[in-house]
Image (cartoon, rainbow, N blue to C red; front, top):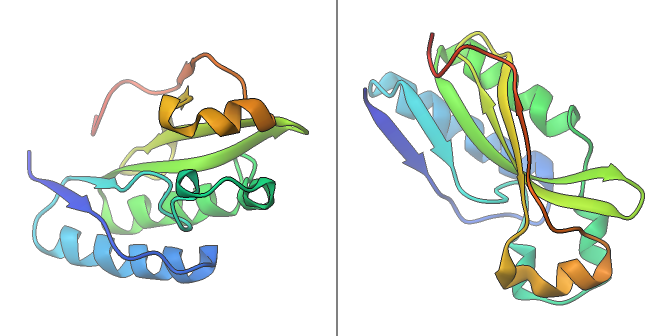
Length: 141
């Protein structure tokens, strides 16, 4: 299996980052990648570097705008795509969530995690623990 790891300088807004991601995924697929893994929390600046509650405005639901865009990329380029999103599951409930998209764009796996490096997030409204939701048969099948 050919794997591509994508990391890029983040802009401050989600749409710009998703456009950069789309170009990188297209190039990776053209180069033969079958599995594409995006950087952690790639839709905005890595918020764990600063301690401000304003960063919670970046959180989004799953499904939401980023999952729709990533699903379309996986489907268009026929790659398995792994993305990391700042998820808002409910008011005051936030997670760093990995989403795996199959080649047809459907969500195969959702994994919620909390990173110790973001300890301040725990204090401002996130919770500890993992939630794994398996929906498919396995990567690329």
